[in-house]
Figure 1 (cartoon, rainbow, N blue to C red):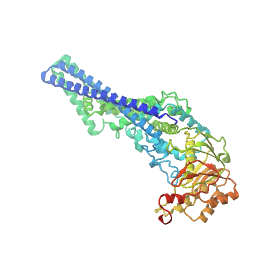
Figure 2: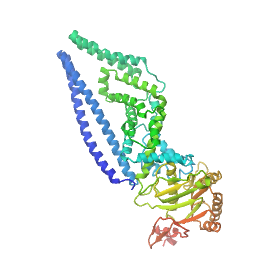
Figure 3: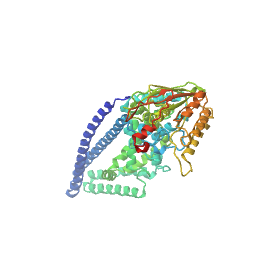
Figure 4: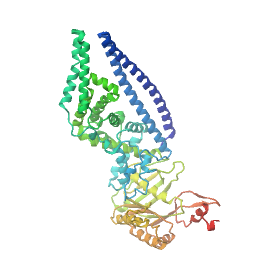
Amino acid sequence: MGSDLSSFEKRGEGIAEAISGLEKVSLRFSIFRGLTFAAFAACLASGYFAGLNYIYIVGGLFLAVFIILCIMHAATVKTLAFMRDLKVVNERYISRINGISEGVYDGDEYYVKNHDYCQDLSIVGKKSVYALFNCAETFAGRKRFADKLLFSHNSGASVEDIKSVQEAVKDISSDPEFMQNFQATALGAPLDSEAGDIAKLLAPGKTRSVTDRIVVFLLPLLWIIPIVFVFVNPTYAKTAALGVLAVNLIVWGIGIFTGKNVLPSGITIRKIKMIRKLYSVLEEGLEEKEFKSPYLKELILCGSEDGSLMSAKLSGLCHILSIADLRSQPLFALVINLVFPLDYLTNDLLLKWKGENETRYDIMLDNLGEIECLISMAQVAFTSEQFTYPEFVESDDPSENAFFDGDTICHPLLDPLTRVSNSIRLDSEIALITGSNMSGKTTMIRTVGICSILAYMGAPVPAKSLKLGRMRIMSSMRIVDSIEENMSTFKAELVRIAGIVDAGREERPMMFLIDEIFRGTNSDDRTEGALTVLSDLSAPYICGMMTTHDYALVDRTEEKKGSIVYFHFSEKYTDTDITFDYKLTEGVSRVSNAAFLMKLVGIDKGGE
């Protein structure tokens, strides 16, 4: 394994113990908060009915203790929430290492119709590459990871570009605990598409109000009046204090009614907490981590020309939202706004921050999404018995890029304990793969496709070694008909194959993966059609793999040889069963197990 499963299981035990301890501490804070608030209320009542002004001072002390307890409790609750999220993340790592590909987000929304390989290679959807490896908790990160899986093969990225990403993935994957903490911090951040855009949450178009600033300045000054009365004429101190409370309450109520003192439109306590979690990612060690990768350092700087870090721009927002979070408890929101215009202050500070940082929203979110994408790519290393960072052909010559040399490559979605690895080398060649049903032919060409895609992303691949050129990948495997488009299965396959042939005329490096070509027509037409396709795709800048049961096709290609190479899978028989070794071997297999398989399920001559 690329990662020790026991280390994650041990960490899970430690997390569970920490959660249990924090829950007990949180309960104690709740009890003491309730008691101190009750004492505060009792002092107010005693002072009012008994006419003892000094009791108000005692009540003020209880209020101060109550506020301190609220702050400490909020910090404990925040830590508890983080540890619970960390527990979830750690459990996902364990599941991923065990080969369970049912992620929280399967990426089905990123499916692209008529894509080069999306529907064939299990890229997105249930039990997909995306579902297994995705660690992104933000919309920006999830979309970035999907885009890398779907379009990296055709992005035109240079070898140096891919290497810089590889270095970043190596760097960030060297500390699994950091990756888990990062993901746990982001867990619960705005997830639904555009809701992750802070600019939208901060009420675009709304500017700071002069009224807000006047209220924030004047209302606290009103408390000077009862303080003066305490020393000048104590008889009226109580009345003055009640009057200030009443003014604060009235102003607060007017603000709520008119919508002027509350948080900008779209800002709710829930969203405040989600935004805080998203951006506290930076304050939880991202920038403190001494990364070596220049690409990672560039992401952290967020394109800053003055060298300032992302958190330098975001710390103000985090502090403002921390203040706003004080009002998350309705009772405390009432108490604090009776004493001080907290909502007006929060509203004004948020709009001020927005005005100063509005142009950096998209860059911040995009860079955080890229970091999440790098963490997702690093997961390949944790789910593989062995892994490698591929090498690339250092040439722009199309014919030299039609190259794939994989040593001990395996399919990342198969059970890590039972999957079988294989090796294959193609140099401007077409591999014709034969073998019986269920022997591993389709899995083999999918393995080559997925490993190539991971390589172009800059991710590690499950292999001993891999060297390849930069090629467009196109496939034809899972063919489905369409009643709406008046498309039969055979016609749908013709369209897919025609697309591959057309792409092959562009004289740019390409790898094609075709499973059982033209299975929907008669044997003669299938053979002739396949020969035509192989002829069209026989170019020095193309390599590919085609599986077939058509031995007439094999015979016809053996007569011409050319750029065709042959591989096969085999099996062993007993009286009652078949066993497959799933090992790719050079040469041609002419064995068919269809009749034997039909007999095993009761489909034989006369039902005998």
